[in-house]
Each structure stands twice: as structure tokens, then as C-alpha cells.
Amino acid sequence: MPVGVSVSPVIPFINEPEMERILEAAAEAGARSAFAIVLRLPWEVNPIFQHWLDEHFPDRAARVMARVREMRGGKDYDSRFGARMSGEGVWAQLLAQRFDKAAARFGLNKVRIELDLAKFRPPKLPRKDGQAALF
Image (tube, rainbow, N blue to C red; front, side, top):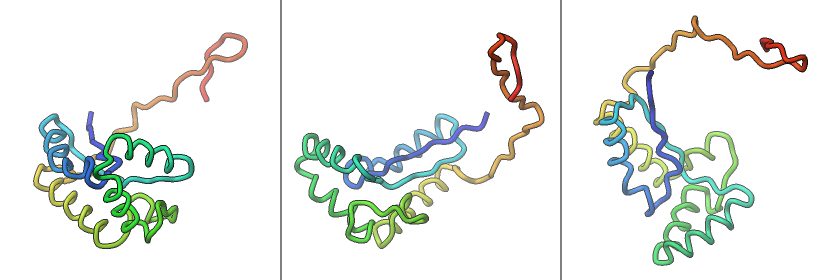
């Protein structure tokens, strides 16, 4: 079974320095693909995250949020399609380049694997009368 890894969320100055080691470990464990999503702070997640950040990384909290805002056009979050998962600007581009180079170095994302769906069968769901039924 093909396995991949999600390096997400990428949090500047918190787990971002570990990106290459995560990809290397994933490749060594047999992963064949990888992707990453830059930290997203929609709705009520934002104050919860910032509280967590202040509690656990008070020395870096301001730097982390400054970098997040640099990748989000000066805002804590940008919900626009195409920007919300990767961010924009120089720092987002640098993160994407680092990720792509590391993934290539460790042999990830080389080939897209086509899965054989011929043997897939939808699960049977119980009916109200106790009998199994297909979707």
C-alpha cells in the first residue's frame, strides 16, 4: 500500500526547522509521497493558537506571528483559494522550495501511483430491518 506523509501544519520557527528531518524519516520508513500545509489560523483557531504559542514559546511568539503575517498579506489568516494552504510572498516561496528540494533528495513524489480500484466494494450498511444493504 503506498504511504505518504503530511508535514502539516508548518509553523515558522517551531517545527519548520525540522522539515527536512521529517521528510527523511518518512522516506526511510517507506513513504513514497509528501505534502505540506502552512499554518492556517481561521476563526476561533487563531486565539487558541496564539494563547498556546504565548504559553509554550514566549521567546518566539512574536517572531512566529510576524512570519505568519508575512505569508498572509499582513493578516493572521487568508482564506483565499490557492493562498490559504501555502501562503504567499518570499517566505512561502522559500518554504516551498525547501520542501520540494528535500522531497526530491529523499526520493519522495517521484511517481504518482495509480491505485487499482477494480476490487473496491462499498461497505454494506445495515438497514432498519437488520439486513445489510449497499449504498
